[in-house]
Image (tube, rainbow, N blue to C red; front, top):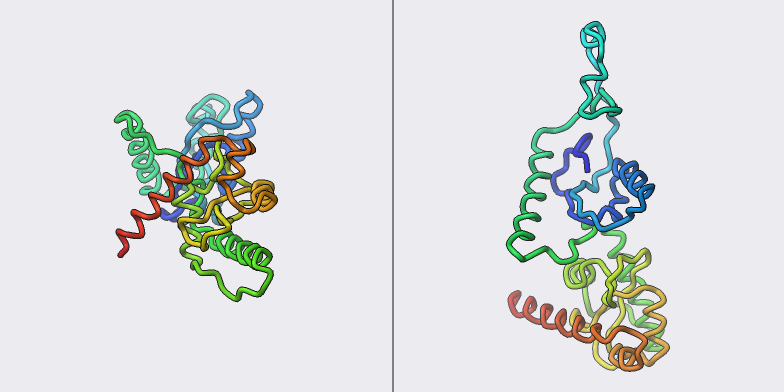
Length: 241
């Protein structure tokens, strides 16, 4: 995606083309790809930064006087005027791309790149909805979650990659956090990311994810996914100590 009108290096992301809604400049690219039947499957580097109040740079009058200004375009049928670009940003985009490709060539591709980071309001909503669910299950008033909002962000973004824990791990429009096993305390190890329907299904079957898998309602590989991420959370917790 383009680096024009952007200046914040902390907003650069790697994601699938289908998840670039934070970048309004990517809209036309998605639209053209969709016309060819392509909606996903293309990894891209883009910025979640909203474009500032800038416009296309004017073309000097002398260029018009020379004639054939269309020849100044990068491609045929491409605009001649350009958006202002801050020099280091394209370089940072290139470093992201190079790192991604080198890892892929080395046989260590980056699995499920994080869709978007710095989503404070989303973390607040995830924590609030989780607290409401905990209160419903406990049948009482729980004033505060035993995990922090930072833990919520860690569980969602890093542990479960901003996707559903249930294979094939889709990116959710309304993600929710839930205990994997309602019989065990709420911790980062016992917390998964689900869609609203998945969370309701889990609740309807006693709140024990393993039982839902055994009944064939979720893919069998779900258990291995959860166990692997629990081990990951355990190793991170030990490292922090």
